[in-house]
Amino acid sequence: MYKSLRRKRPESLKDLTLVGQSVYYDLNFLKIGYNRLNLDWLFSNKLIDLYSITYVMEQALKANKLPTPKSLGLGAVASYFGFEREDSVHNALEDAKLTAACIKGWMQMSAGMKINP
Image 1: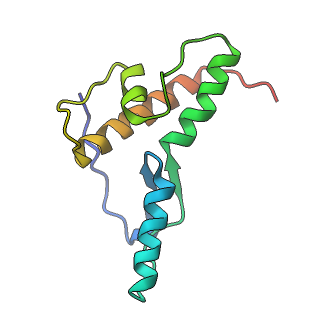
Image 2 (image 1 turned 180 degrees about the vertical axis):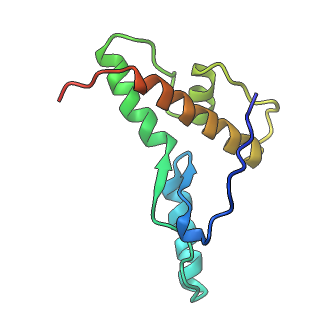
């Protein structure tokens, strides 16, 4: 179902874009941990959040009277694009792959949309 997600290794973690579902919570959690341990933040401040993208796309779909995901959660968004979890137990790697597939789905869908300012 998934194409390879491997890319050229970045020069540093600052070159990466962090991607996830509701990633702001995780990012803040990590930043607090780094701060408590007096560690330098090694990661980029660039991020892509599936939850935020889904919220915006849901508004556009509703305005155009098109079907929307049942909720903003990963399972509902994945189902909207025809993907399913392989197991009912949480699996971080599977969730990461589903998140990537859903973001790709939104990007492909949005490429054909017109947005009125």
